[in-house]
Image 1 (tube, rainbow, N blue to C red):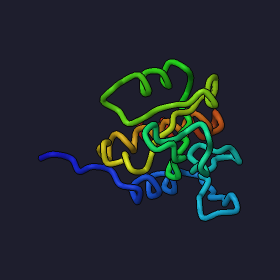
Image 2 (image 1 turned 60 degrees about the vertical axis):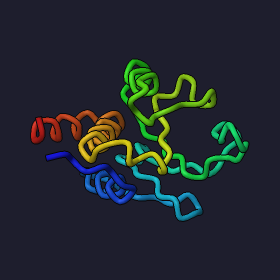
Image 3 (image 1 turned 30 degrees about the horizontal axis):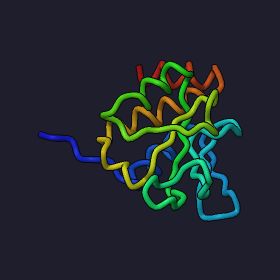
Image 4 (image 1 turned 180 degrees about the vertical axis):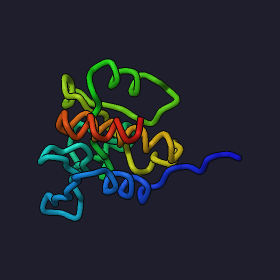
Length: 136
């Protein structure tokens, strides 16, 4: 049986489902998922650094997802089988970008793993240890 592809609803469900998560708003309808007041998934407003190379239009569906470091980031953005990318604005920042229009290129399990890892990258050591003890 083939696993189904991920949706935006899956992204929200998984992020909200992590322990100790709060959801902030940025003045728009775009949620900011936080643990311990640290963002681990948030939705960007259109910015000049993320745009369609053909039309020049700014992407209005970019999600920022934290990672645990540069090696993980490069592994995701350099793998042509993933929809993750980065821009020069995020050089040195431990995160990857994902367009919502491409979330379906991931399975639910793949998306879940990336979001869980984002939460782990931002959670306190105690919360991380407790979660890992429960989930392996």
